[in-house]
Amino acid sequence: MRMPNDSELTLLFEGDERGLRQFIEQHRETLERHQLMDDVNELAEELAIEEQIPMVFAFVYSVTVDWREYDEDIVRLFGERLPDETVEVESTDTGLDVTYNGQGHSIALSFSGKDRYITIRGFQELIRDKYEIRLFAGSYLSDTHDFLVLPNRQWKELDARYPVQVGEIFRVIDDELDFP
Image (cartoon, rainbow, N blue to C red; front, side):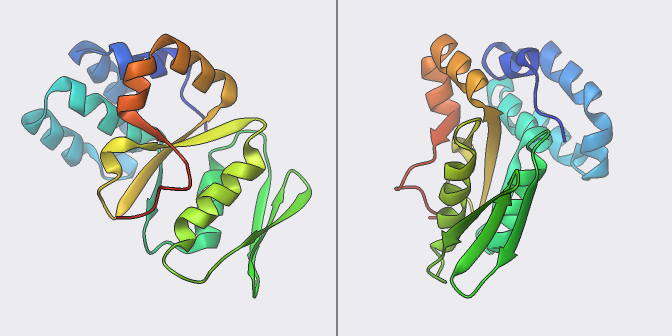
Protein backbone atom coordinates (compact mmCIF):
# COMPACT_ATOMS: atom_id res chain seq x y z
CA MET A 1 0.00 0.00 0.00
CA ARG A 2 1.15 3.48 -0.61
CA MET A 3 1.50 6.31 1.86
CA PRO A 4 0.06 9.80 1.49
CA ASN A 5 2.16 12.26 -0.44
CA ASP A 6 3.05 15.72 0.83
CA SER A 7 0.18 17.48 -0.97
CA GLU A 8 -2.33 15.02 0.49
CA LEU A 9 -0.91 15.66 3.95
CA THR A 10 -1.29 19.40 3.36
CA LEU A 11 -5.01 18.73 2.83
CA LEU A 12 -5.26 17.73 6.50
CA PHE A 13 -4.12 21.17 7.64
CA GLU A 14 -4.98 23.58 4.84
CA GLY A 15 -7.75 21.74 3.04
CA ASP A 16 -11.03 23.16 1.90
CA GLU A 17 -14.17 21.67 0.40
CA ARG A 18 -12.73 21.68 -3.11
CA GLY A 19 -9.58 19.87 -1.96
CA LEU A 20 -11.62 17.30 -0.07
CA ARG A 21 -13.81 16.63 -3.14
CA GLN A 22 -10.67 16.12 -5.25
CA PHE A 23 -9.25 13.75 -2.63
CA ILE A 24 -12.51 11.77 -2.60
CA GLU A 25 -12.52 11.49 -6.39
CA GLN A 26 -8.88 10.46 -6.44
CA HIS A 27 -9.59 7.70 -3.89
CA ARG A 28 -13.13 6.80 -4.96
CA GLU A 29 -12.16 3.25 -5.92
CA THR A 30 -10.66 2.59 -2.47
CA LEU A 31 -13.63 4.17 -0.70
CA GLU A 32 -16.09 2.15 -2.77
CA ARG A 33 -14.12 -1.09 -2.34
CA HIS A 34 -14.34 -0.67 1.44
CA GLN A 35 -17.99 0.43 1.19
CA LEU A 36 -17.28 3.84 2.72
CA MET A 37 -18.96 6.19 0.23
CA ASP A 38 -22.19 6.24 2.26
CA ASP A 39 -20.13 7.22 5.30
CA VAL A 40 -18.38 9.97 3.31
CA ASN A 41 -21.75 11.33 2.15
CA GLU A 42 -23.16 11.16 5.68
CA LEU A 43 -20.17 13.10 7.03
CA ALA A 44 -20.78 15.79 4.40
CA GLU A 45 -24.33 16.22 5.65
CA GLU A 46 -23.47 16.31 9.36
CA LEU A 47 -20.04 17.86 9.89
CA ALA A 48 -18.09 20.99 9.05
CA ILE A 49 -15.44 20.57 6.38
CA GLU A 50 -12.62 20.83 8.97
CA GLU A 51 -14.06 17.80 10.75
CA GLN A 52 -14.69 15.84 7.56
CA ILE A 53 -11.18 16.09 6.16
CA PRO A 54 -9.33 14.06 8.84
CA MET A 55 -12.07 11.44 8.90
CA VAL A 56 -12.09 10.91 5.13
CA PHE A 57 -8.29 10.98 5.10
CA ALA A 58 -8.33 8.26 7.78
CA PHE A 59 -10.74 6.16 5.68
CA VAL A 60 -8.05 6.05 2.98
CA TYR A 61 -4.75 5.95 4.87
CA SER A 62 -5.30 4.77 8.42
CA VAL A 63 -4.57 1.48 10.06
CA THR A 64 -7.75 0.66 11.96
CA VAL A 65 -7.41 -1.41 15.12
CA ASP A 66 -10.40 -2.73 17.03
CA TRP A 67 -9.95 -3.30 20.77
CA ARG A 68 -10.60 -7.02 20.14
CA GLU A 69 -8.07 -7.31 17.29
CA TYR A 70 -5.64 -10.21 17.40
CA ASP A 71 -2.17 -8.91 18.14
CA GLU A 72 -0.54 -10.70 15.21
CA ASP A 73 -3.14 -9.07 12.93
CA ILE A 74 -2.21 -5.65 14.31
CA VAL A 75 1.41 -6.22 13.31
CA ARG A 76 0.31 -7.41 9.85
CA LEU A 77 -1.94 -4.36 9.37
CA PHE A 78 0.87 -1.95 10.22
CA GLY A 79 3.35 -3.96 8.17
CA GLU A 80 1.12 -3.65 5.09
CA ARG A 81 1.44 0.14 5.32
CA LEU A 82 5.23 0.12 5.15
CA PRO A 83 6.47 0.37 1.57
CA ASP A 84 9.53 -1.70 0.70
CA GLU A 85 9.62 -3.30 4.17
CA THR A 86 9.03 -6.93 5.04
CA VAL A 87 7.15 -7.84 8.19
CA GLU A 88 6.30 -11.32 9.41
CA VAL A 89 4.72 -12.25 12.73
CA GLU A 90 4.10 -15.40 14.69
CA SER A 91 2.33 -15.89 18.03
CA THR A 92 4.26 -17.62 20.80
CA ASP A 93 3.61 -18.66 24.39
CA THR A 94 5.10 -15.37 25.59
CA GLY A 95 3.81 -12.98 22.94
CA LEU A 96 4.86 -12.25 19.38
CA ASP A 97 7.92 -12.99 17.33
CA VAL A 98 8.21 -10.31 14.67
CA THR A 99 10.64 -10.36 11.78
CA TYR A 100 11.20 -6.86 10.39
CA ASN A 101 13.42 -6.68 7.32
CA GLY A 102 15.05 -10.00 8.19
CA GLN A 103 15.75 -9.12 11.84
CA GLY A 104 13.95 -11.05 14.56
CA HIS A 105 12.34 -9.28 17.51
CA SER A 106 10.08 -10.36 20.36
CA ILE A 107 7.15 -8.47 21.83
CA ALA A 108 6.18 -9.81 25.25
CA LEU A 109 2.45 -9.72 25.91
CA SER A 110 0.46 -9.79 29.14
CA PHE A 111 -2.42 -11.77 27.60
CA SER A 112 -4.86 -9.14 28.81
CA GLY A 113 -6.84 -6.28 27.29
CA LYS A 114 -3.73 -4.12 27.52
CA ASP A 115 -2.04 -6.15 24.76
CA ARG A 116 -3.38 -4.11 21.85
CA TYR A 117 -1.29 -1.10 22.85
CA ILE A 118 1.60 -3.25 24.05
CA THR A 119 1.69 -4.60 20.49
CA ILE A 120 1.39 -1.15 18.91
CA ARG A 121 4.12 0.32 21.12
CA GLY A 122 6.31 -2.73 20.52
CA PHE A 123 5.93 -2.46 16.75
CA GLN A 124 6.55 1.31 16.95
CA GLU A 125 9.83 0.52 18.70
CA LEU A 126 10.88 -1.81 15.85
CA ILE A 127 10.24 0.73 13.10
CA ARG A 128 11.24 3.91 14.95
CA ASP A 129 14.42 4.52 12.93
CA LYS A 130 12.37 5.06 9.77
CA TYR A 131 8.70 5.47 10.71
CA GLU A 132 6.37 6.71 13.39
CA ILE A 133 2.82 5.67 14.21
CA ARG A 134 0.38 8.26 15.56
CA LEU A 135 -3.24 7.95 16.63
CA PHE A 136 -5.95 10.00 14.96
CA ALA A 137 -7.17 11.79 18.11
CA GLY A 138 -10.78 11.79 16.89
CA SER A 139 -10.88 8.00 17.17
CA TYR A 140 -9.54 7.83 20.72
CA LEU A 141 -12.84 7.57 22.60
CA SER A 142 -14.03 4.77 20.32
CA ASP A 143 -13.45 1.04 20.61
CA THR A 144 -11.79 1.24 17.20
CA HIS A 145 -8.67 3.38 16.87
CA ASP A 146 -7.26 4.79 13.64
CA PHE A 147 -3.52 5.30 13.17
CA LEU A 148 -1.34 6.95 10.58
CA VAL A 149 2.12 5.61 9.78
CA LEU A 150 4.50 8.06 8.13
CA PRO A 151 8.22 8.29 7.56
CA ASN A 152 9.96 10.25 10.31
CA ARG A 153 10.89 12.94 7.77
CA GLN A 154 7.23 13.69 7.07
CA TRP A 155 6.26 13.81 10.75
CA LYS A 156 9.16 16.17 11.43
CA GLU A 157 8.09 18.48 8.59
CA LEU A 158 4.44 18.42 9.70
CA ASP A 159 5.38 19.11 13.34
CA ALA A 160 7.48 22.11 12.25
CA ARG A 161 4.93 23.49 9.80
CA TYR A 162 1.69 22.80 11.72
CA PRO A 163 2.60 22.30 15.39
CA VAL A 164 -0.80 23.17 16.84
CA GLN A 165 -2.88 21.40 14.19
CA VAL A 166 -0.78 18.20 14.35
CA GLY A 167 -1.38 18.13 18.11
CA GLU A 168 -5.12 18.55 17.56
CA ILE A 169 -5.45 15.84 14.91
CA PHE A 170 -2.93 13.27 16.21
CA ARG A 171 -1.73 11.80 19.48
CA VAL A 172 1.78 10.47 19.89
CA ILE A 173 1.90 6.81 20.91
CA ASP A 174 3.02 6.87 24.54
CA ASP A 175 2.69 4.70 27.62
CA GLU A 176 -0.61 6.37 28.59
CA LEU A 177 -2.57 5.39 25.49
CA ASP A 178 -4.97 2.50 25.71
CA PHE A 179 -8.52 1.74 24.72
CA PRO A 180 -10.92 3.64 27.01
